[in-house]
Image 1 (cartoon, rainbow, N blue to C red):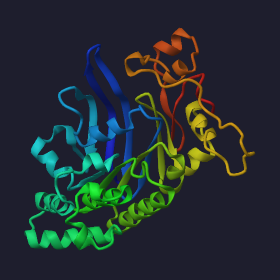
Image 2 (image 1 turned 30 degrees about the vertical axis):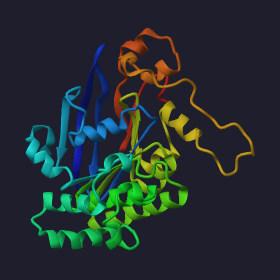
Image 3 (image 1 turned 90 degrees about the vertical axis):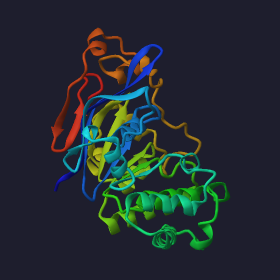
Image 4 (image 1 turned 120 degrees about the vertical axis):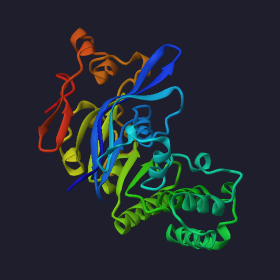
Length: 325
């Protein structure tokens, strides 16, 4: 099995008034063809910045990749021209953005936006693009797709807009789909429909999926492997069954313990992780979860814990305080 996408020691920083700050700090993982990898963690842990680094959609000029490689089909995307990247983005890599109302152009009809992406990446006539646009909307479960082509984004519900985003992301049958919080702000019924739709399209197109979410239920049901991020770093990575059965990092255990259980006593207070993620400019060089837990130790704050494979395909940041193997 070959790695379709491989991230090696990725460092992404932003230029701020206080200097350069690292939002992604030495991240490495891979996504195999046909597989789904879940990227999980609290808000502000660097999940979306990692995804935007892959497809070169960081805010410019403040956001920059300082180190590392982004290998897609054995080609480093950091070394290709902006023109080549535009071909890859939307063509070979599809993206479902976190907020469809912000990602869709509010002044253009749905049909125009679908046709535009088809004509940009394929040699296709306007007539054929229109026909394919209808087929795409139908494939993602939008009723009366011919009529919906003339709608503006604000005329659709949240679930319908999310389906349009999926149609645009899959229009050119990409090899990799990056789904950034694809079910945010949707009710549970629509959420299940969206996830089923992504799974069925994945099977049909044999594509890989990078699923970004903070919902561990979504991870458990849809992913083959889990990458747990905290404060810009990966603290644990393992196959989904292994991670849920045997979490080894204190942060991963905290996330899993915070999931409501169906057999919990009614009105029981939910478990939470104490403290909060430090501001990015305050990140320490050493263990950042120890920083959150206010463990005062000069060595823990100065020396980055070793990130190593502790069992087959199970990687953990082995801080002496947080690694609980």
